[in-house]
Amino acid sequence: MTNTLKLAARNVLRNRRRSLTTIMAMVLGMTAILLFGGYRQSISYGLLTAYVQRGGHLQVQHRDYYLYGSGNPTAYGMDDYKVLIDRLRSDPVLTPMLNEVTPVLQFNGIGGNFARGVSRTVLASGVVPEDQNVMRLWNEFGTSSAAKPVALTGAVENATVIGTGLARTLQLCGPLHVVNCIDAAPPVAADAASAPAMPDDLAALVLPEGSGGKAAAASTAINTQVELLVANPNGAPNIAALTAIKAEDVGVKEIDDVFMSMRLSQAQTLLYGRSPPRVTAVQIQLHHTADMPAAQARIQEILGGDLRFADFEVLDFRELNPSFGQINAMFGAVFASVSLLISVIVLFTVSNTMSMVVLERTSEIGTLRAIGQRRGGIRGLFLCEGMLMGAISAAVGTTLALLLAAAINHSGLSWMPPGRVDPVRVVVRLWGEGRLILSAALGLLFVAALSAWLPAKRGARLNIVDALRHV
Image (cartoon, rainbow, N blue to C red; front, side, top):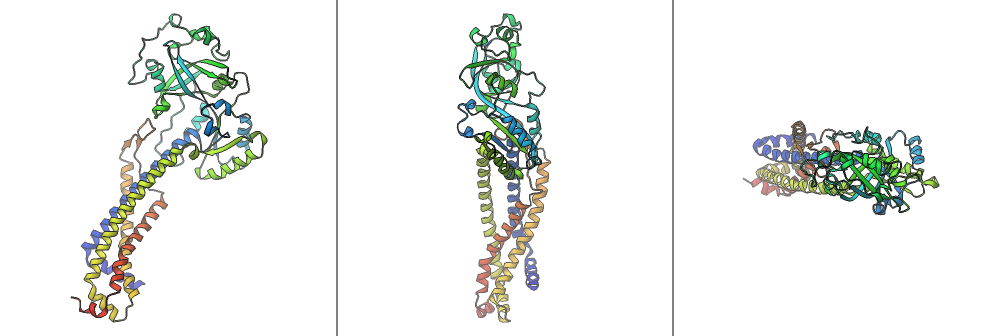
């Protein structure tokens, strides 16, 4: 084996120019595959981080809420959610895994700006800002995600954050400083007494915990006031006067046009009044994504062991966000296609080189066969030569890819991915991705060996006499 390797190395160096050309083709192929693979990894980790920051790794919901709850969220409210949260936080198995556990309430309603005479349906959510801030700091994979505190942090109790699309519809562009937007109606009068008040029939529905009736509604700073009308679980209407403190672009126009966020306590008061409050989900964020299967299994045990939680189920973020799997599958298909194309090019390049080598050394093959070398030894010699060039190419290609990845990561390049409102740095994630590098190197070695196999087989089957007479 040692002699075969030494002889293969000498043969590689015999025609340096041809060997260098072949190696460079494989190096470029290896580099391209690694760079694209590293970029794909970066996209995958970025998506995962974004979903986990906003929704957690796991969510406990009422059974079938994911499938049917969007039409009537109040029908799938979770009782005893506080008991469940305490149970999860105190569980000895889950406690080391947990980063945050927080309740969320999502519901539908009609948001209006009665001072402007406009309204539309909205998708509202009640959250605990302090818990959401903790979740947004999660960044296990060190992505370029810039975590921003929830705008509700430190705001008044009846504060709300709305989407920029909703702000345009409600004609709050000026007060909320929405760019590329002009309010269709004249500016609202600064004097609340001279401005149109909420209609009497709606003002009568305002909960005491909310604004306190028509007089309170009229005294509110109506330049950013939004009235939210919802139906409680019994079908009766409730309304609250909220103060819009900010308009945020959520990245998806369909959501941006209906988005509204407020404090969980305000949302529960509006939706349930004096009835026992509920939530539609309990978000669970872990320290490490790898703990997700174990945590999900443990939570399922807890739910199955208490009759109060019999109607609850636990879902992971991939089930809740099908686009994560779809985007990964798309990039996986593109990566496979690029890898296959590059592999075919390398295959024909190395095969052509090895065919030329066999043709030039026909007489040497005859001499080796005449002194007792078996056909297997001839095949092994050429296979070793092809794999040696593949190994050199894998080492050089990996080094070059790592250097180029570092240069790209420090170049400051950025792009605007779908569903984001802030530019994201272009990152090629190769450092620490040993599995990707190893699979690419082994793939290149396999292609190099396959390329050398047919020429080596043809050379080993040469007739000894014919080979000796070859000029």
